[in-house]
Length: 166
Image (cartoon, rainbow, N blue to C red; front, top):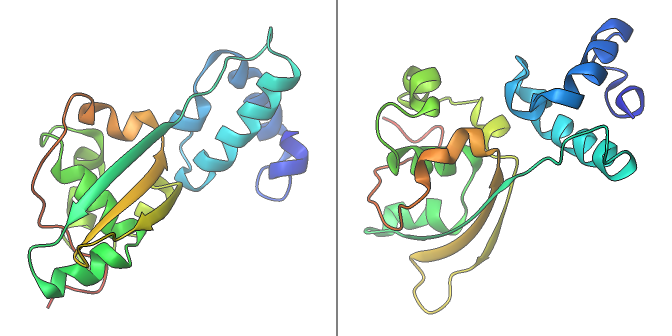
């Protein structure tokens, strides 16, 4: 499975090491290359389904977030969100010691936050409903990134998308 899904991105030795580590560790959260986290999660799912006694069951954070913009300018991000905007919104809901802030505080404050594409694995907008400045979005990511959001139901954010700072 690792060779099929990651063969072109990892060498044989790396795949062999991952095969062993996947039996014990949450590699989809811990692997050094963030761009592989989402794919490693899918590999972990397949291995668990095929060999449930040998591999741990992976889990994923599925967050349903309703975002309301206060201004018409901000509504653009709410109606057409991207990973950089959503990561900044989630970060604003957690205290300053959260892992996203600790690792990427400088990137988040700039016009370019490319790591956000690997933090937000997938998202889907569920629609704006009656208020054109509001949108409900389902976000899929690792619990490692958003653990600190557990128990929090509402927060304010001054998030922006990449390229919007002047």
